[in-house]
Image (cartoon, rainbow, N blue to C red; front, side, top):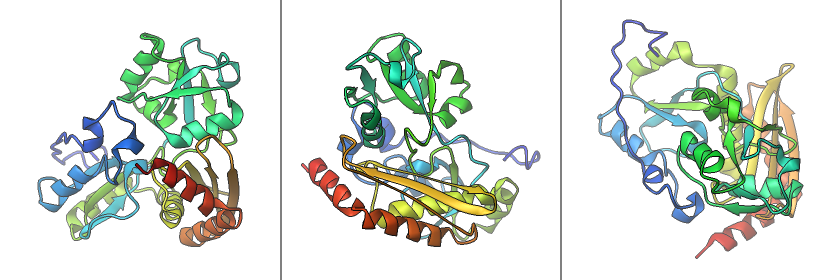
Length: 287
């Protein structure tokens, strides 16, 4: 924002969310939507702030009336990365290795390739999670978003970048979502120079897939979209908590119609049994 508008005075406000306050509990156990966004949305609506910056993967697919997704900057690397105590890749982790992650999406996909792995809750910011693995030895490895590691300059700790054939990311991973009041034309104009339409189109497609399948942190759903050779492609996976059963699908279409690409992809997933897998996952999560 300051690069686009050097004359602009920006006042940063730190707002602690419910997801931040419960760092020792797995996100699926906290439950509910907007774990990392609700407090910021309240501040937008009451005028305390003019702009909220979210990790796009934390932003629910529906938002309160009066708010809008005002801009999406250029997306960072959406892939996941493995951090391991002995700096070894996924295939070289010891038998029965303990991986620290509360993400059901990551657990399910890692189990497809390494069914022997065990999992434990590991939460906190990027620095904290890396320290708990490399220094404290609380587990053998963890999985973090490459985008977050890049933003804080900690990619030198990466043992392996996990390709889409190994772990599909969460919808919106690597992207920032800038949220504002829908009627705030001044903020919309200020954000226009940093908005990146290709990233926005890909994000729109991914969010449509999640919305249609009613996916969330309780659903092992990976989805990513990108533009290539003038086409919008979207790939997704739905899996049971232990990696099986699983269904995968790929769809493509014109970048100008991300909703149609998402609709096509969801149809493929449902034809392959995605709804039954997701329903079973939700039953397992119900108290």
